[in-house]
Length: 75
Image 1 (cartoon, helix red, strand yellow):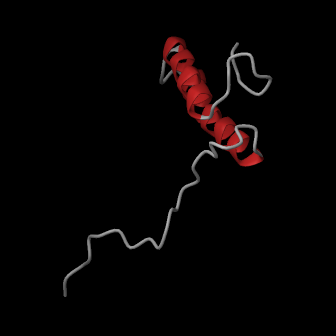
Image 2 (cartoon, helix red, strand yellow; image 1 turned 60 degrees about the vertical axis):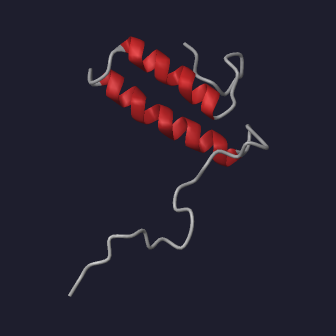
């Protein structure tokens, strides 16, 4: 009996940022969750502080948050 190796998901299974509203609750939740994962890696010493700063910049751009936004982590 053969096993299927193709994708059998009926639709999108991960949440994507909402480009229409960068301050939508889902967008902010996704941003903060992603940020928390990388912050933990930095605190555990698995990535450098410089790498963490670059990741924050990338996440800010991905979720459409400017560096001056009250929702963006910039410190």
